[in-house]
Length: 147
Image (cartoon, rainbow, N blue to C red; front, side, top):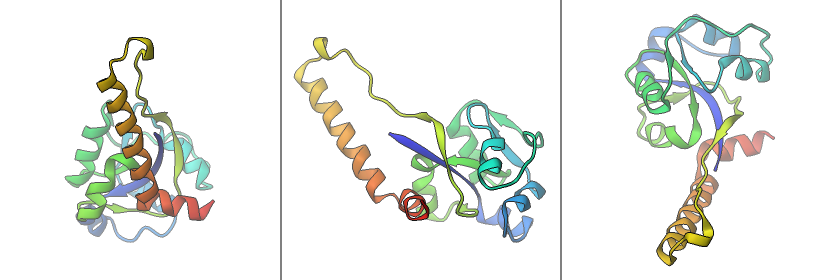
């Protein structure tokens, strides 16, 4: 499953921060960092030439990063597939339309020769669900329209 990254934060944090109209505006907030997905790459894709921003905490776990953003601690560079429920529920808002492909992806790894029929069925179901999720995912639809 391929992953796209885009900036998001809680609605309350956005109210405190003020309007975000362009990528450079994100720098006035606290950026929540992931060890695996540096902000520098997103800023470069958005046309902002800066070194890796240092302000803000770094998280080694994507779920903790998203939790910090949901609780209003700053702006996260979120994985689309992980943040969809929070977006739908209004716990977070997407900031700007620019997104980039993540260097991370989700894979089902197993030894096919040793797999039992129920393992094959599970992996087949998982792949089908991931494809269906990506096809119905608003963030992915938006990024496809922009390309």
